Image (tube, rainbow, N blue to C red; front, side, top):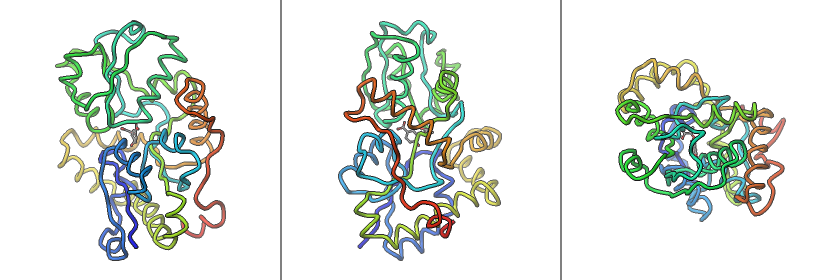
Length: 288
Ligand SMILES: C=C(O[C@@H]1C=C(C(=O)O)C=C[C@H]1O)C(=O)O
């Protein structure tokens, strides 16, 4: 029996994965599957992936099927640094325009729609989902949304593209005062039951990896990322110091508010008013 772990193929998720003892996990039957968030959301829904990072939107959409791992998420209190709407026009002038949405995302595309409809009161924007490619998107659309490393690379060349840019996390924070949780760590309920010991082992390692990657191993994580993706050391340091990886009351409150608006705007069939956790209280404390 193997445990299939979804690994978001973007840098934002690195800390909980960076210091995993992959050899040990693989020896014990774990297998890693890297995909962009939308790919993992689908794989998890189809039962091909048991556990891992998925879009927080996908948890709400599939409410009832997954439980969430405590103290793990990808969250920002304000700007994210890697979720941008790039636009030929200022934000206030987007009514009547067409916007390209990256096919890699679920949380951020709905976040953008919610922000434009709920807070800017736009009713007439055409959205088209396309493969992320800044040049092509910029050539054919008035504005385009990118996430993850695609967004970071485009942010670095924003002046060449001559576009306005808006950080969705910043907009959300300005309008609501809430943090926004983009990725959650979900476990399919069947896997949580049937592969209990493996899920426990993995959870412990996720927590340890996050602590080490943001603590004693921070410098070598930054070097590793800079070597793979370019950019400056200062950029990556600031990027990771800004992101939050916990998932406690404040993060849940922000996420539930997002779920409320997502339901009101018709993106969920049922309201999502609570979050089911994998293990709670004392049980988890033993694993931390
Ligand atoms: C922080 C980010 O969040 C990601 C955004 C997601 C989405 O929009 O569905 C899903 C997972 C997150 O890892 C990012 O893309 O940079």
